[in-house]
Image 1 (tube, one colour):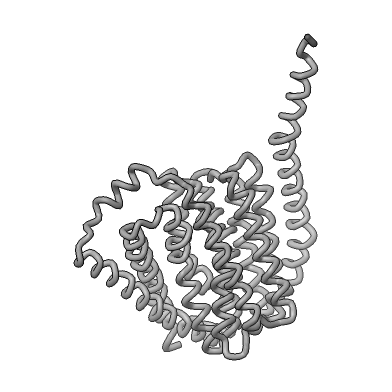
Image 2 (image 1 turned 90 degrees about the horizontal axis):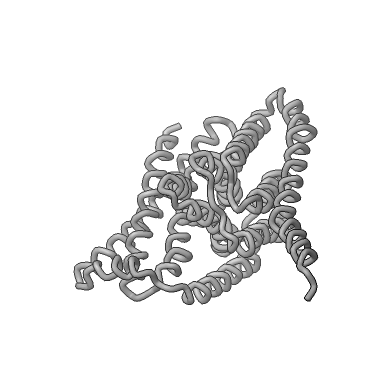
Length: 372
């Protein structure tokens, strides 16, 4: 129990370190003439997922794969169900067509890729090379496409007011260094506190990784998305979550697999349940996002409900509670089937409204035109 108290200061250091790193790196990149769009796609995406990267890489290196994998899988579930859900409850979230056409399929693809690569119970270093390679290619493609985006006059003014003297570069470099130190020490404390908590409560490191560590390392995404939603920048809320989920699978698991001494073992429980939940909630995004290109308040509340239900299942399963069987049956034969039906109907209605109705109207207009 003597190291349980390290969880809170570890989380605070992780959040502070990520903030310092993003602030220093983004301003430094601006001074070097990097377009703001590219900064958002790379530096900010890295910064909000930096806690996951630090915790998982260090855990994998120390031979604690359950925390490393549980952190990533749990964070992706938290990002969609809890963070998007809470953000949508605050205000309905706008979803861009680009996200539906590119990023959401990419997120679904990375979740499926993780399941395929880990199906043998292990992520090898070769798997890590593949994941990091795909991530590098994805970043290159995003940067190349983003460079065609025009730089707004407001953004140019913000870049121009940053002094370009030696003291400015020194301060920005200091922010980056302190950010990296905060991430390093914060991840160390969080892992020690998480392991101590697991032992004290008698639950597995995997459950702690899927819950306490996953929520803790997702706090930057939570803060970014909820604040963006409150400020009316609702497309940022969705883009931040989807980008972080892609980053977590490709980069965090990729680098964790590379540093693990003998590859990174994946617990059978993850493949049997948690990875499938991650894939399911990723797939659920498509019909929800496609329905009017927004996430409504009731859909956000439904996401939050499912995260609570998922967490309750983990607690019941880890404690071998007597109510586990009844709870599982209720979820499997009542809640999940009705949800699937609702998602299918949502997708059908959205498809009818977005594509079939305009085509019928167009045909009717053409039919009503008098022939010349």
